[in-house]
Length: 304
Ligand code: ADP
Image 1 (tube, helix red, strand yellow):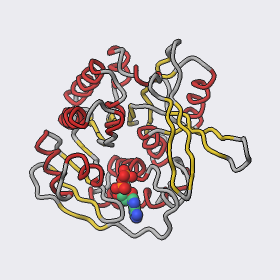
Image 2 (cartoon, protein in one colour):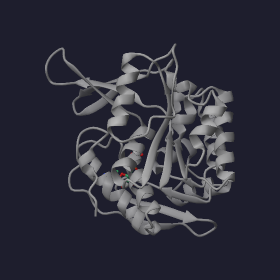
Image 3 (tube, protein in one colour):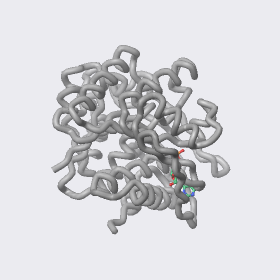
Image 4 (spheres, protein in one colour):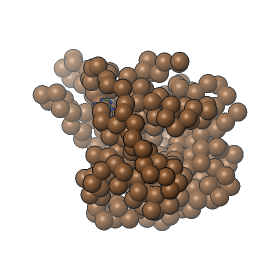
């Protein structure tokens, strides 16, 4: 039996139903999306737990119920009496999605405020997954606490996997973001960045430069996603290699492309695939996810 913990913020998602005045409610968030696809990709010999903080109100109950219904473990989601979950609302105008957020005071900002609870959540896990968004939402001292907890986890043989998911709007400044992202990468054995974001915010000339930059920070393995183009990867000091990915016939909505790629990759790697085969599995899953509307598409997971 293996155990994965995914650490971060899941939010309520409000969107139009098509009926005037009626909204529908879903749940999503980068690390939750990856946990969802890991849960649906891996068999019952893997436990997938979500690590976060929510309130004790009805909305928080509904989110925890949703995660439980998906088969995701909720024992390490802390309940805070004075907070609730973050929300966002999606508007679609001329095919473009835009987002309105209410997340500044969300419970998830406190997900790393209890070091004992954090250590308990990580205890006995094989792999811990987190992202730049997980780090961005925390107060400084909790950023340090989470990095320290993951560093100890890695020291005991756990695998730490990080997606930088660069979101400058969640940070005080781009410089602050860059500094913390590199500190996070330094405690992560595998880093899964997306080239477009990295080129924008770190000025990388090409995906190989992204690989080298994270390796220079101490990440042993780096896999750089690059939309429809290709995936570039390297382990240790090896020269980065590039792998073409299969073309996707129909793109409907690219939400959760990177998150589902990460899950498809990790599920394949954890069940014995080579890096190349795991990259192909990640791209296949992401290709199906972007062929449908929304972040969480259970049907996108097809067992080989
Ligand atoms: P993110 O969604 O995090 O910005 P990318 O855009 O690089 O990341 O996409 C992540 C993965 O999703 C890619 O590695 C690829 O497998 C798949 N993907 C994204 N866009 C396309 C596309 N236009 N055609 C085919 N695959 C795509």
